[in-house]
Every structure is written in structure tokens, then in C-alpha cells.
Length: 106
Ligand SMILES: [Zn+2]
Image (cartoon, rainbow, N blue to C red):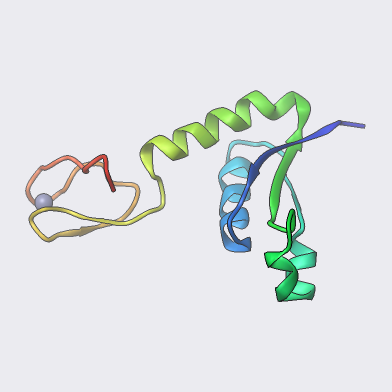
């Protein structure tokens, strides 16, 4: 049996589910903890340690951290608005309308 390690603590359940999707897309098995607590009683969400956390097998930890670091750098999934006013989806790093690069301080 694999030993599981925590690689991320999410601010909310949707974020945890989003992270799981990113990791599973890379072929990494994922377990979420605290989700069931959160759905059982919303107030427990505010309790210490009740935030949903993302766990992977210890042998997949390095790969998982690489995926998470990449996500932090690129901001994948977050839409952005170009200086020209064009609204772009998160996967685009350059505005298709004016050619400007995505600002770093999104
Ligand atoms: Zn633009």
C-alpha cells in the first residue's frame, strides 16, 4: 500500500476539486481529505484544520509539486483581461487581438 502525503491545502472545496483535476490529468492518483466534513457542516469549514487538503502517493509527490508549481506560475484556469479590453481564457498567455503578453501580476 502506498503512503500518502499532502501536497496542497485548498481554501475551499472547489479549489481542491480543481487541483485534483490538474493532477489526475497528469496521471497522478489523488485523494481529497476534509471534503466530507465540509459538506456535512459548513461551520466546520472555519475550524482549524478543516480546510480540504489534496493528497498523493509519496512516490508521486515530486511530480505533483511540479504540476502545482507550474499552475502557480502560469495561473492556468484563470481568465484575464488584456490592456486592450479583450477578455481571454486562462489557457492563453498572449492576447489574440493585439498580441500583448499576459501581465504577470494577474
Ligand atoms: Zn489585447
